[in-house]
Length: 397
Image (cartoon, rainbow, N blue to C red; front, side):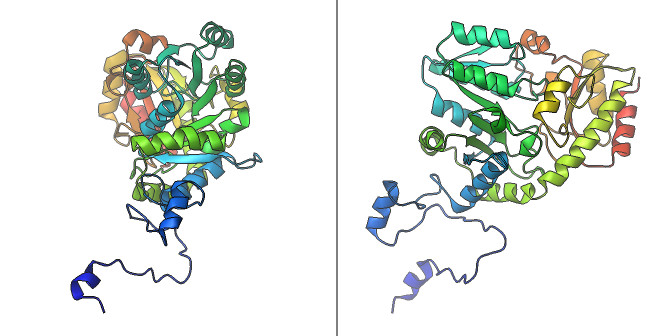
């Protein structure tokens, strides 16, 4: 018989006799081996298994596998997903895993502001140059790929944040592969319920799962999904393991709970966003509405080919009064929460020029439609009549 203090310090035996109905949270930093031989085999990838939660964790792995299954649903192949600590962590882990000094990235100028800063300010200091180009112009994109053989990655968002401009995923993927580059896309806005980039040939998909996948604003996490399972394991998983960008089991568990209602939420987000966009399009105080579900949107036809089940819950609109009108709307709104995120069940408003794109060069920002009067809405699942009434009073002169 062991002593009392030894018994107190020992881990208890798992008494589970049947599988849990809901995914449990494996709140453990490490996993014990039956024998040292088993540990050696796991570390040498001879036997699959868990060793340390920075490398892999059952809760995190289960949620990553589910996201990969959603992104490949109906496509006839499997992909590999690596969950990480945030959406920006997903982008940085992908970039650090794929690129080295001397490589170049081809990207659009209307990316999320944080992504632009990461590419320019962080990757730039490690010798990776980013070339910004209008990726809607396929000739211009090909010219850049031909002129710069050092381009190893073509990175895009569609719809873009916050202008909702769309690019041709299939055409850009084909161009990237023709010039020996990978193609990666941020699919946070539409989610796999509305858009499956793997169907159009991309190599990697990133998400801020904080947003629509979780949908409830109570966790921060991200994910990288790779079409080539061996490449993803070798490049992305290894970068995650060594950089320590791993996802917390609790954050993964919250993401899993949110994803259970993903299809239902995205249907309501989309229908509400379309109703609001149609209202704004007719309002005299509004100069432009950016929503790919509108027939007037310049990328409506392209979006209709690439998207299904609606056009998502994100839109932006430009007020004629510029900065003053944009800030006035933010202060007047009663139902739109002023929060620097998106994808929650309630409606969120953001003024990019004074927040997300504050540190992006104004010339670059305005050249890509991110003006001082632009307001971005993440449309929630509330009653659309209430939302429209609130927006109407907030933009009244």
